[in-house]
Image 1 (tube, rainbow, N blue to C red):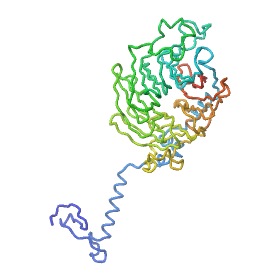
Image 2 (image 1 turned 90 degrees about the horizontal axis):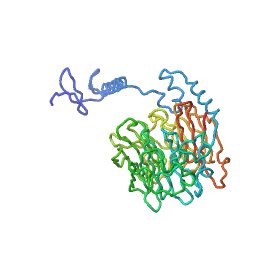
Image 3 (image 1 turned 90 degrees about the vertical axis):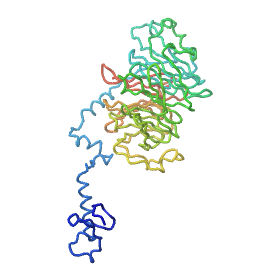
Image 4 (image 1 turned 60 degrees about the vertical axis):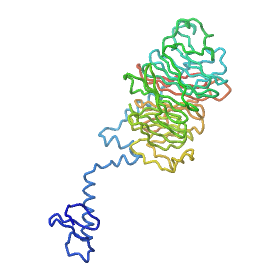
Length: 467
């Protein structure tokens, strides 16, 4: 037998004698022999112990989601951020509110019970880009300039809204990039769903003095800026969500993700837009958010959250939520994710502390996992919404708050750091319409002059909560 030192089953290689010895039972091998069963066991235990000492041990804090929020700052050498909690509580407690947009009363003469399904903020003018639908299911993208406090009436120059694009179905999402590129999507009905892309421009001169009669549902079927606009019809049944990659604000191209009935589509470019299938799923993608420049989180109807890496085009099943996921938001860093779902499920997760997904729970026949089988969250919020969709949801990590519409039509604000319910508003009671309306879209908007402002769309109005 060649004395090459390789390990052979049932033999021990003696490096001094440079030969193999058969491993024998303890009562047969000579006393103190290196090739007895007892000697083999001790060598194996010593090898395992040495390897464990060489490996970096995982922190016990990170193994428990229940104590991570309490002890993680201590492990990092930071002090308890009590002043941050006090600041957010003080700001939320002193929030005032006013109606910022009222389509039914001031502008929308001729509209048939308009509802604001979604909106975003024009970062240059401070106005709103609205996704509006009426009782017939016709949708419009409406540019709504900021209110001029000095104007005596809404027909003043530069104060009139205008229709940017008309759709044949309900508008499902509106997303705006830092460079003022607008992406609007429709759900589709008797026609295929549409992705509409345009650049936000100043109000056209011909629209400046037309007054209230301008804003009529479906009046304009072409965009106000056709030279910088395009439409894209993906081969899907429905489009549910869209979000720009805010990390690429200074990059040469735009990057937007579109959530559809069978996965995620990535659109990228500036003038010459291209697309690719980023993620394929068997369940509807209802919510999207970028966690980092290259990582996208997608919330699905089957109560799962999947991550997609744009560099490798790889996908992983990361979380099981307690109900169909209708909102996903980055909560300060790429490891913390706030997830809002039906079945009264609103949780904060740490992606570093999740267990591998069980294959049985991932089966497509299960609509959503039971609460006992869901991923353990860092914080579970006292949130109530059994079945209302779509519902507004947003996170501001700097202030440390979560704002979410509930099933009763109100708006609830929670502390992102403690999970405590800070404040709530019953908005349904403040509307004059007989039918049920609720918060379909919520945005927490940064304010250069002070704390962020919360804007919530309910019915035909947008209510602004400000400090």
